[in-house]
Image 1 (cartoon, rainbow, N blue to C red):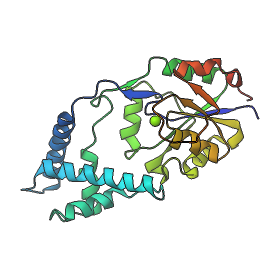
Image 2 (image 1 turned 120 degrees about the vertical axis):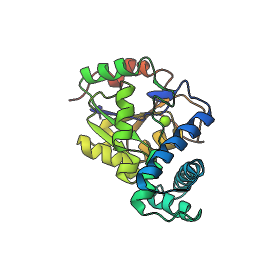
Image 3 (image 1 turned 90 degrees about the vertical axis):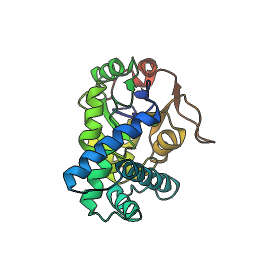
Image 4 (image 1 turned 30 degrees about the vertical axis):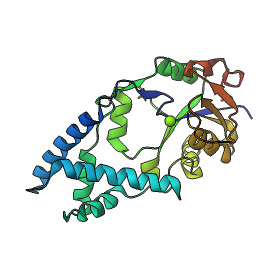
Length: 247
Ligand SMILES: [Mg+2]
């Protein structure tokens, strides 16, 4: 079946951490923002650095657990509230969510850089008639993610955006791929998934009946065979299967 749509992973496929500051800078930024948020919430006498670290740690731990088990996105505000309660801070779910959100360090601050050929490749694929979508695992969706996309120059007017924290499932759960296919109104066999993770992108897409192109990276799974393999995104333009869209 000819392809009509192409779905992209983002991290290490279209952008990467090129000039990431040291962890201490992330901690400082998160601490400062949590401190401001605590003031806004009228919470006094709390250790902002410890709260930032606890909030962020709870998110990472919950995501790790989800990745190792059912691939259902945790309710991070809930997780954060419970973790802070163990430190003696009694908050509502909304307050905990606001503190967690305050720990976010943007793509620009985190040194995220788009690969040089990413945008031109996406534009060329679109000019060939392909519908383009995102399938990404992100703990922060909404404007956090869209602002990062815009700052990176990747706000190309995607035809579908399947973001794990918004859809409720993490790749390689079939539901995240199916959400994108549904939004694009294409069958699995009409879409190509492009990503750098054998486990999340390649095996995940193949499990729902899609073909998958792997951006060669340190392998994170055994026994997964991509349908296509490339090193630079621009190489996609030379794939005979992507010469033009079936419309
Ligand atoms: Mg990736």
